[in-house]
Length: 80
Image 1 (cartoon, helix red, strand yellow):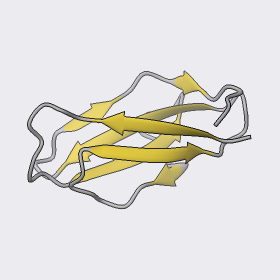
Image 2 (image 1 turned 30 degrees about the horizontal axis):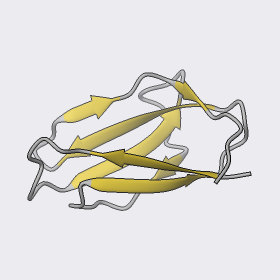
Image 3 (image 1 turned 45 degrees about the vertical axis):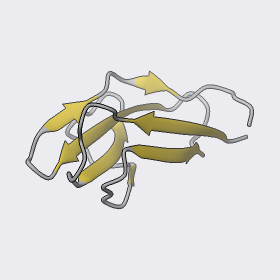
């Protein structure tokens, strides 16, 4: 079963290109599990098609080089 995950930014990111990656939850500098195409949109929607129980983290880098990383999170059963 898949669920939609939506990330959004609302703090004046207009004009910046964002690059987002899903990484193994225990390896914030590891090889990406999934890379999203660069975007200047303020919202990213992803169909969470990973196995239940998978631990992930998300890394977002903007075109200025600023990096943000989430805490690890675990894929759980969900409904669409």
